[in-house]
Image (cartoon, rainbow, N blue to C red; front, top):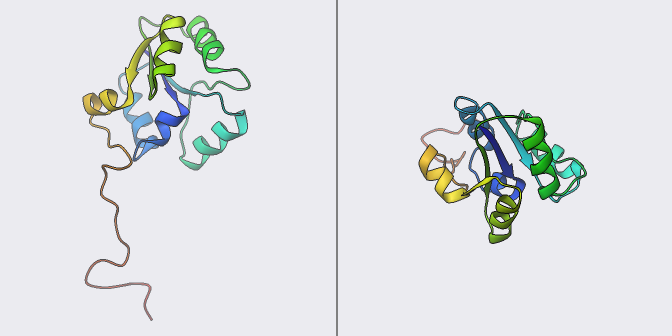
Length: 130
């Protein structure tokens, strides 16, 4: 399977790096596509320490999905997104569409708002106090 995340979907995950590492266990290729400029995708993936097999570069989402499908020959091509426009892009390029919430539920991934945030000042002791 080739799995592509729309950048905005990836940003809504609690731990995008863990999601990519998990997806690598059951996909052959995983990457990011976006309408945003290349540097935006690169900065996000670098910050999150995501190693991607492909990204959209200067192309739009549809052109990227078409190119990825030609270059990465797998039985399935699945696009994870968040909007109706994402669904339409997937359908127009002959990719399966999977809404982020459905993908997260099926794979046990936490969405950003679902994961409990750790409070560094919570607890018995504080190691930042003199």
